[in-house]
Image 1 (tube, one colour):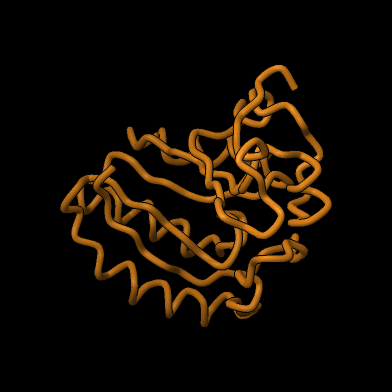
Image 2: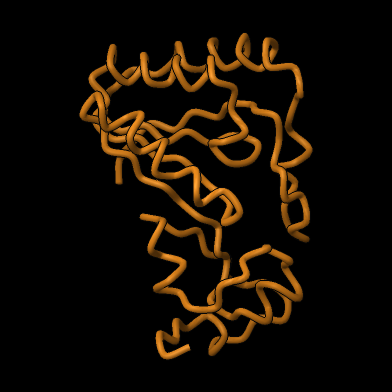
Length: 166
């Protein structure tokens, strides 16, 4: 999956409860300062692979409107035809609007969720992910890609297996 990856800053993860994550420490509530920083980073995008992954201190909804517009402009100028964003489960209702925003310009939007594990009890009681759905196919309905963590304390080989019957 060759692509460019850009790290931007937003208003921060709104969930802020995952026991392993420090995304929420990298944020600013100052949209103007976020945009100034993000503009500098987006200027480095070359379009080399026609794919761009945008990572920020939370979900795509935590980016200011000016930054989202600049991301679109960057994609158009650099002939980027596929863009990837991360999104927490709590913001899944915002995904269709984002897809439409980019689709108007023939840009495919891929959305990634950090499920971390298919073991529901471990995910919610230990990692505190905030995903109230237990069925992986239902979780996948809104998302294209998934982040998984392996080798965490308390994980077993069996807990890493996907059980579609759940």
